[in-house]
Image (cartoon, rainbow, N blue to C red; front, side):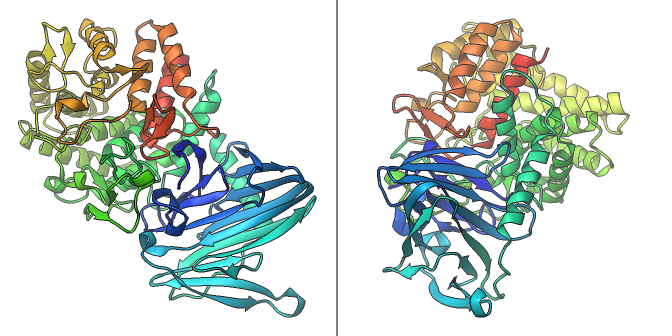
Length: 593
């Protein structure tokens, strides 16, 4: 059985990422990209769905772990009755390879170690053909393990492993001062294996790269460590070559344990990536912002009518959702989904988030050519043509399309940023038309999206229920944070959606989303509430909620999508970009004037 979600740490080479359990087992790894089929899939099943464990033989060994400085180099210290051993796990950055390095170093005494390797390509549909290969000459000859199935191949270099009924393993002892390295490298099966990595060199280079990247952060204050770790998570989820930012490293971790709300988040949502762009710009990361802007121009090039809410890491459009039975699901939660059916939805808010992000880039001086403006004009034309169209909303409702107030406010934001581009930067466009439409949408929201009797903005036009996404109305400037209508909305959110001190997205029992009721508080929403509190003088409430949220991070500072308050555990895909970028915004609101 997989561990609790919070018991996993992330390692990444900015092409893909692995989840390493507190028990020393890599239970999730897709190669060579975040969205590739899994090689280790025990996270969504058990060890027979693929894993790579290196841990003390003693089941009572105690583990303590942390990242080395501001990196994704994971160090686990194992303490046993006979000695102490250190395991360093990382994925080398910048070498244009797909490597996982696991270094075992004896600290004191001696420790018996166990290796259990179970390779399962293609979401656990293919057990590879495995053979041993001699490398080197004379005394330098070593035995490597090569595994091949279809297009995928792995080579393991390290202690010689023995076949054990569709798995490979061995036991070995590490004494103080001894170092045992194992390197796994993925390569296309039609090519020859890459040469062996120099572990000392790639460890030093990877450490230096992460530390250098993190040193560019401009945040200071009491939440500096949490902010920097969150920014590092956003970078770890950003593809080195394409600039695409995936929403999470996993698929199908359930929002409700045992339920059906299991989705694939290994793609680039325009919304989440646009919000990430704004956060990176606020913290001095201009290169990543420019890379994402370039990704956006490539991904949505063409007819605006073909605009999607999400794309593949390189801008792929074909992301059909399908259910697979080769992985039984996290703690049995089914179905396991690959791809995402929301790709075909119309979500009117997306263009607003993109326009807000690109406008912020222009203010920061990142926009260096007219291509981005041509794109924005095309998006605004699309907005005009679809102005009266109902949508699925920010939460990708699978029920009936409606006029969601948040979506309408984001349409307002899109038109507003178009107007500002002309007025403030001298860009060319039909500003009078955009200004008229902006004011028209504003009037519609005032008439249909605000319930005067309840003194709150509502989830949908002419409705009575509220939605945590309404907190974003102030964030994009539709209204002031201290506007009486927003303050009334906050009161309604606290009354209707606060659950054990955390904020739900909306009430699932209303049936608005077309799915069975039941989910846990959505962490990003509570961070949005922190921001709202901080901007309206409720600093004590903001800090109390912020501390409560920070306490929900795991031991290495990671957050998933949701939190099961009753069960005291994280829920949903992990680590979640939206949770971490919302954390950064909340910290900024508490520390910046």
